[in-house]
Amino acid sequence: MFGIPGKQAVTMTPAAVMQVRKLMERDGRAGLRIGVKKGGCAGMEYTMEFVDTADGNDEVVEQDGARVMIAPMAQMFLFGTEIDYQVSLLESGFQFNNPNVADACGCGESIKFKDLDELEAERQAN
Image 1 (cartoon, rainbow, N blue to C red):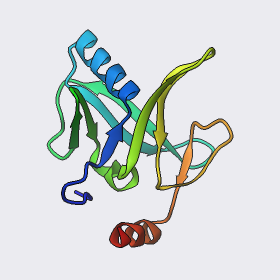
Image 2 (cartoon, rainbow, N blue to C red):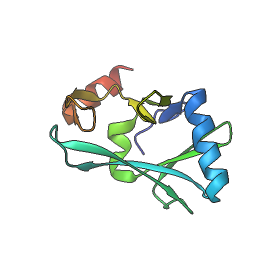
Image 3 (tube, rainbow, N blue to C red):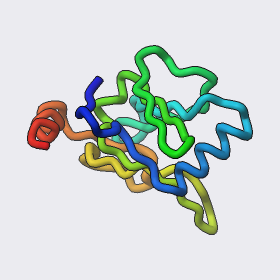
């Protein structure tokens, strides 16, 4: 929907690919749907859920056997994002390296996106 021909909407690091694929196989799911919703101290939060089928309007990205579906309302905010999976002593989870984020809260759980005019100008420049 908001893509550039020949370029995937999001990419995944090898660690993210391995984790998504592992969870898809373990639970027999079609893939990971990601999106955004209003919430958190910075205004928006990422959403993630493993699903059985893709919605007809989802942008589907497949990489080395891992499948990510991007909810329609999130596509413009997630374009160009790299998804990583990190493990530390205290926590593990998916991380989003998103060029569309203008600011994030201190805890890293919520984000604020660049305004729509700025996002569109950047897309057209690339």
